[in-house]
Length: 405
Image (cartoon, rainbow, N blue to C red):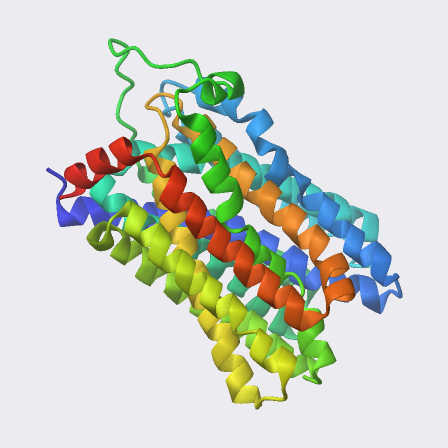
């Protein structure tokens, strides 16, 4: 029987791990384009920096290695997470000691940061699945999404705002200090010893794909967030085209949108257990589709800025709910002993699907117009709900609902 205090400690541990991932990612994705533009780099060159986030899409390739190996003294997860956190701190301090004009160093630091964070994410996800009971997973996934978004808000918002006051070195030292402090809970955590008497599957990509009934799960995971990504990728250009100023866009997407997404993740995670896994995916998916479809209103006719705030806030809130529900189900679909590998493969499917959708969004919006583009995005989101209805593994759902009752 898990006590409330144990649950709180688990959630606190996970929140610090995911905040550590979002902090440098938020800074590099928000600040790097600004620094590059000030040095007169082209928009095409700035856009290509997204390639540096490739480790997030490819992390499934080395997830089995992280899943199999680790120190018995520290524990399989801690023996990966602690060194990776330490290397991240060292990298940030090193970049802070260099001049901001050293762009290639900055690009290299961004790639290294993504590689470290993506690998840390493999171990953190595995740790989360290991320590969480089925009833805890809904709220924990809300905390996971919220922690990551909070890290992005601090790294891509707050530190960018105070950058002029604390300087280049102070900004990177602050990030290093926050990640260092966030490493304390995992240092204090003690993993349960591995029970070698229980047979567990060998973690590998092939063994994951050979599982009975895995193809419907793959299809569901791959499609669930694609429609939302299709719309979101064109949202900022759309806001520019309807006449919003840069500061309005910054507040709308960087602050209000992020906070609403954070709140949605927490609310969605808390409701997953009450509503059930399948019902949550259906309800949150329909709300996500409706919120995406609402963008056709400002694309059709002029609306006030508060109306735009309301629509964008609703979309990020519903998107956060849907993400928390999906991540909870992804935990359920992991095999004991191969948790990190199974979860990482599913997470990579989400990244690849949303990346494809984002990449195609510009071509679709340019040829169809914003109204048709957002309508198509809403239709794609509705189609993902149809996939949930048709493909959700019913027997496993009934088992998980019984465990959560």
